Amino acid sequence: MKVKSYTDLIAWQKAIALVTSIYAATRTFPKEEIYGLTSQMRRAAVSIPSNIAEGQGRGSTNEFIHFLGTAKGSLFELQTQVHLAKELGYLNQVQSKLLLESTHEIARILNGLINSLATPE
Image 1: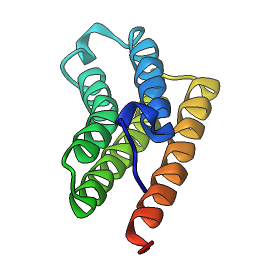
Image 2: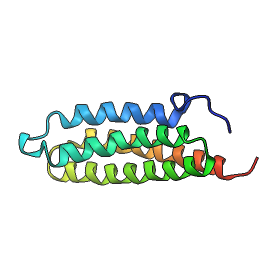
Image 3: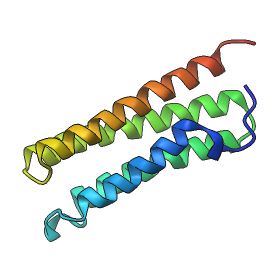
Image 4: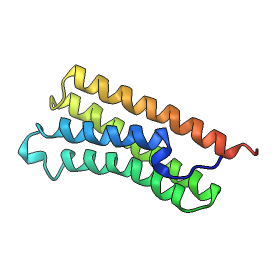
């Protein structure tokens, strides 16, 4: 599988959209969370497309797969943080449902990408 640019990857495009959604959702979190959950969620979200980009830029399929795995780890971290934010009352049911649906979609895309890269052509 040859990709000209990481920006062509649907996984990266969807992850960028997720970052935007996370920033919007955390904007209303309590001020005392600015260095806590707000920061954690934003950093985890930013890590997802960043690792996709870095991995694709490495030039090695094995390194790309490794960085996609790291992106998945950040995605699962973010899922946990969305659950926490809902439990703490910082996100409502609709917000958390939409964010989690987005993370599940990205996870499926990343799994497909990893499987396609791991399968010899």
